[in-house]
Length: 201
Image (cartoon, rainbow, N blue to C red; front, side, top):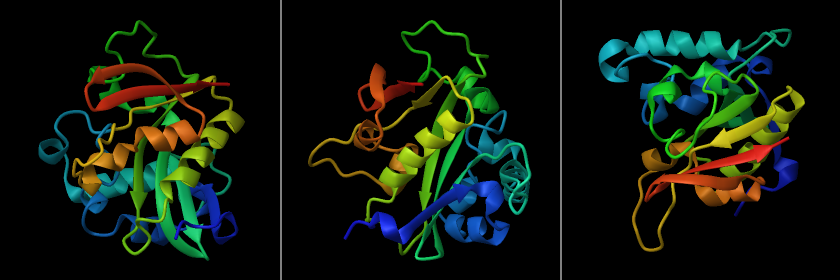
């Protein structure tokens, strides 16, 4: 069954303990990347180690520091258990987005505009998957970006096709339906299975 809103609490990562974030990422799947795919300059598996990526994530989240001026994502709790993560920051915080063709295909826009934020990753902890947690996480990311002064929020989700099998890793960027529910609209389709979606504030 999908999570009921009363079961969930979603907070900025700097208001969560680091151990909770580490439990969400685990040691497999997202635990290898540590949400650094768009952060590491170069090829992530060649130009960084797991220990470096973990240290980067810990610094970016500023976990356990509610007074921190910035953080790199939001943490979802289901009945007080750490259950999910969404990465949301100003788009300029992701160096690899500058060189990826996905955000820019068919578009002419200032890549250095700090007013545009981006959602780049979802992680749902094992044991909490399959219950629609990415939907409230996406909505929370929209609200968070708006509250922090963003002019717009973008996402780069996958288009899932009926009958076509997908793996968990393919949809770490989210799916189009998740962002549609949060109010984002498609602005371009750089590939058959990838879209750019956006909401203005």
